[in-house]
Image (cartoon, rainbow, N blue to C red):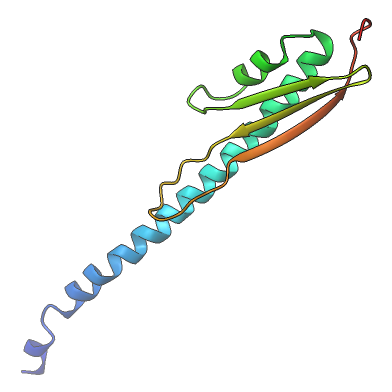
Amino acid sequence: MRRDRDRGQVALEYIGFIPILLFVALCGIQLGWVGYVHQQAETAARTAARVEARNPGAGSAAGTAAISSGLDATVDVVSSSDAVTAKVSIPIRSIVPGFSIDPATATAVMPNDDPEG
């Protein structure tokens, strides 16, 4: 007879726990996405600085082309007589409701190989 009073309890506990599991899963996916976007920003900065050092004027386009096309990257390249600095910023979209994430930024500096630089 005691068993009849507990009928359905497990189903209610499961339904109550599902939102927590979904939230944890979304946080894990978001963490992976943040790491991926930061890696892409570093790749874009290194590529932009390297290409700009060897071929002036082509660094920004090379940095943008070096990463996934779905990312809205901003690539700024500054050259001086002895070094090239590339700064990249990529906004990170949040898939977890209520979270605001700062954009991924990266900076790379390469020696200027341009003989006229």
